[in-house]
Length: 515
Image (tube, rainbow, N blue to C red; front, side, top):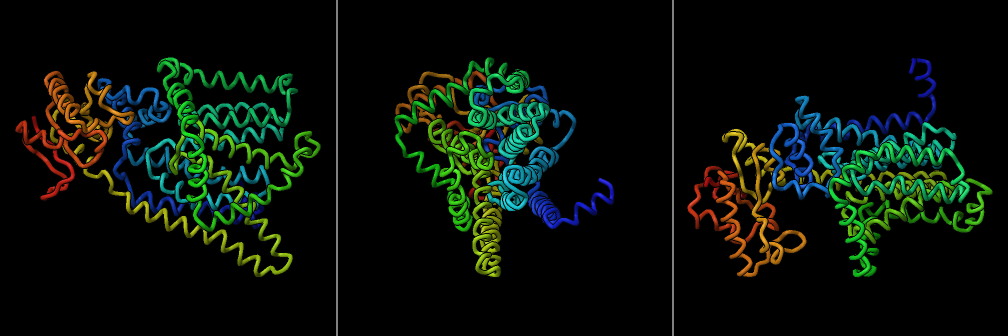
């Protein structure tokens, strides 16, 4: 962009506000990025990072590979493997694959809000997303949520642009980024499903005669070939786990999850933005009253409302009837349309009150937008501070093993993936490929406290020790679900020697023993 075009761009107030939001977002995120650095990873982070380390270092496939295969998509581990191969450290990976997509997603929320409604809605939604506490917190976690959201938003934007401008290349890009989205995080398959359902409502069955539609379908299949190969390789495991098992359980569980997901999605917005969301829902009344106009496509003014409503409904369906549960980061793609509705609510309230008092309208606008932003920023900061050092002892223990042991060292620990990542040593857990675990362990893998189960599991573990000949055993307060009760006294009963403890005081949280 040359100087003249830049000047013309910045002359418009809405563009000035957009630049301010982007600058604020960059400063806000860089502050925590440099403050946190390479903070200790959690189990889910370890899943992706450990397999990247295994591939980049050419290590043998660990025994926990079965846990990863089918449960996690491979795109992000492949990308991180390339980074490790090129010599990049963890901080660089955080910057390029999490922080930058986080900043990009903020801009994309603005673009999507603008495309669906107008620039003002886009600016408000973009700002809200920039300070939204869930999005902020997970910007510093090496998980799939941020890059998947980035790809999903890109797919939606190109889809909507393709419809508006009737450009085939936009549909191809929608297909590409849609496939990248669910190849990063499985539930993002809903992005392309949303697009298809929307097309059928807009075009009806005439879409089947449209060559553009079939080219769109074909492009998805072509881009998804690597993913299809992966699904076949894993024997359709994730489909069986999420859809067959999940849906069956949902029928048994009743409607409880529906109220839970609804309550969760509202509560994580924080109280002031809940008010804005309720206001925004009222702005959709014209769509329901004029549904016949939308259905017959006499006027396309309701198309954006339908797209937002469809987006929300499909997300709810997934987490209520398939997953039967959710946490804050899982429903990140659900909260984006909710924030757009919040933006509609804020603007609707401002316009209505402005008729009677411009001053009161501005006060209400500032309260709803910045009051909610303050709640989110405060909550994000508190959460980041509380969680920044969690699992630090696992990190320290893994790094100690990396510095003090040969590469062929074998370690037994409940924190298998984190230790594999930090120590770069083969890590085994307490689980044994023995029938006792099938009868004595729950779905989560936690061993029953039944005395017989505990005794038989320890005997099976001793056989595992004899077979693999590990050098070290790690006992910690972490991962209690994967640590049998007998494991806590195992080092004393079998005369194992403690060689390191973290923290190094009278009450360590993690101890490394030598066999």
